[in-house]
Length: 369
Image (tube, rainbow, N blue to C red; front, side, top):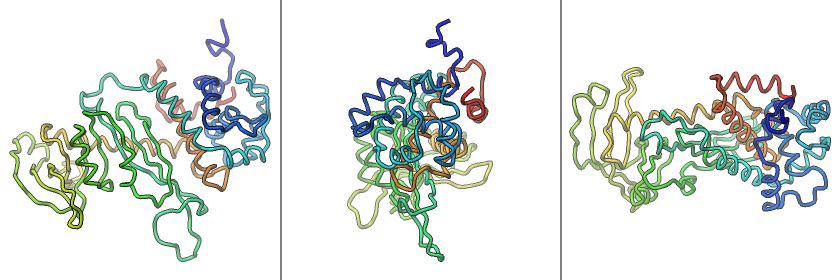
């Protein structure tokens, strides 16, 4: 049996890292100039060290370095023959551009995304993109966070991860890491999806100029009605008895906009009552073809990205960071996203139906066995 092909006798960490072509990491390092001035601790070795940090849930530089040193002979399959020191790892986290790790994730997503879709997806789900953000709190004001200054004067920082996810893939298509004080609506300029797509997001993303642009590009958006929108009712649409029995209260054609801005949007507002929780929602969309119940179900899929954020924070060490600077924090977050993608790839190819939590725990407990 060829050990290099079938991973026989290799630690789990080695098997996971084998999914990342070393030649591609070296190419991206050359593009970003991330190996300049480094003699031994190159981008590839840095990536392996940070993936070990993420999978083993290490909380300090000492823990990472000690763990790698103790398992030095088990990393021969990865051709990692340099035992990194704490100072070297700390300097690399501070100085090496985090953009190279973002590029590595982009390459891996493009290489393996075709393995992730569920063939049982509904027709509209294959075109559905979910947009949202999550804030990762920091113990220091490394990046400015939103909110008022605390009474004790000790203000914490935060990183906001703006994310686009394709619903059938369940992994991010695009991630932008910015300060916690950054506005969600500013991220809307970075959203780029093909014509015919459906985008769902919460009511924090309000930009009527972009709404009009999406209409011209044949892109459907589904969101909730912002409380300060100007609403001019134009025409009530007929609601079938079946739709009413499923919770649809009304369906109307309206004009949305702000009083001090020239951009106005012709849209559709659907009033819906959830039978389980009893909550009322007002959904906004520019699609006049889909049924009101379908629009409500599309918005319900937005919860999928919240589950991704929960998965990311529960299974990877995003409470303790190996550096007290913005670059180190972003590198660790990018490596957590890369680790999540690797586990999703493995899970999609397993014959046994593992839950993600069990798979992550198994990898953590047997990482170097």
